[in-house]
Length: 312
Ligand SMILES: NC(=O)c1ccc[n+]([C@@H]2O[C@H](COP(=O)([O-])OP(=O)(O)OC[C@H]3O[C@@H](n4cnc5c(N)ncnc54)[C@H](OP(=O)(O)O)[C@@H]3O)[C@@H](O)[C@H]2O)c1
Image (cartoon, rainbow, N blue to C red; front, side, top):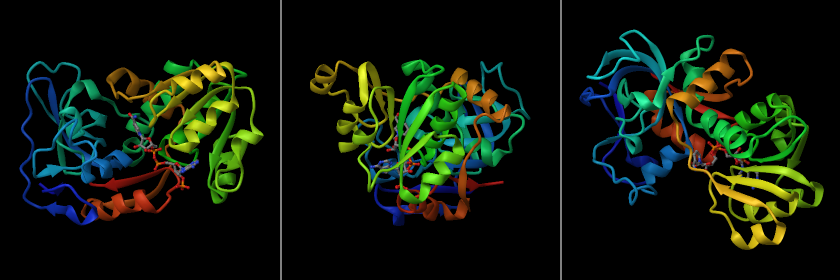
């Protein structure tokens, strides 16, 4: 089968298309899926560059990619929840015991897979798993966002940010978001009540007394955010560990989120996609053969929303 693989860590030139990669062999609790589309995430180029090698060292050659949408073609021992022919979406990252989704076939654990949303195609479904679950876990599970609450979402035009704006509006919140100047109108179209140009405006001088912040940017943006919260507010970051000094100074809670894609959370995302509440935002698609370029584009091209590989 065809797969986008690396034989060593590095920048984009280490990504090659192997036309003779072996079809993965499934073990107990796993399924083999024919991949129709694979979503690209920043973690994919971070894995390529070796950022995660202390946590989970790759066995080379390693197939890149996590998010996918496709069709089950074989089930392993002990699998009763899926059968051959089911349309599924989820995760198949090597970090989570999968075989990597930038390939024609993947093996993955059934715990990180769910039924694909019925009303969206494979390309759109593949754009949802990690970003949709990240937004769900932060806004619903950590923050408990509800009607009338005010939330600031950093990075509103990104993969996670575009999901978070739509979910926050559905939950009835007032949404402010930080984006590039060229993305301000786009953020409003997604549902944001207020868009702030992060390069030319200081969000902490404009926004006050917020109930919650969802940070998908990190760095100094994270540290500056605490001043926006009211006492008792909460900040959830995708990148930064809580800062006890700032938590104490502002009397707020802070959480570092490690997104865990699972069957239950994927099902909620699928339901919202089927109801047209979460609309996958795809800026650009590439064929599998251009996986290298797709990763480069996500890393440097400032896409709105997602980049997706069309595989079948
Ligand atoms: N902890 C976890 O489990 C976990 C899970 C998933 C993702 N993540 C991490 O979360 C981050 C976001 O993921 P993603 O998929 O949303 O990435 P993404 O699609 O690359 O989006 C990032 C967005 O942030 C914007 N941005 C950059 N600097 C900004 C600033 N100073 N203020 C406001 N916006 C800014 C970018 O806009 P421009 O167009 O201006 O660049 C871009 O739209 C990544 O670093 C990813 O690795 C962590």
